[in-house]
Length: 204
Image (cartoon, rainbow, N blue to C red; front, side, top):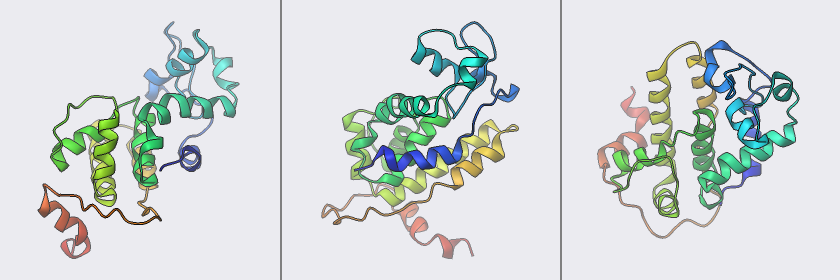
């Protein structure tokens, strides 16, 4: 199963210290309409929910790393039930997007559109969703999740696009080093799978 302690170094590589960019006004603004910034990727609204009052610039600048880690675990990793996802690379990609996009959950849309899952697309990951994630081929799912996430970033565009794409490029699939699952997954999109497995040949 996936482990938060293996995800954390990847998250910290992607997130910096304190910033208060005008291009991220939503994430930097508290409920009083004051731009107070973010730190370690923790937005002002999320930190406000954690400390139960509107944070000041001083609060954001002095946020301990240990507190940011606790918030990342509670509000993002645990909210995605990521401990129950079998493949670490898949879990990392799902939770990082949930963290980076303001709790936007894209895995259900991918499962529905690319794997034929009959599920309601929303921002919650239930145990049924986890079961669908774990029943899918993890390498192909990771591939489709990255494609979906890239399309989302490109649809937003703007000054942050290059940084978002650089962040996404760091997430590389690694196979789970355990005994293989004897149950073979079924693919509704055989052509996509064929192209994926032979992508180098198709790109020539």
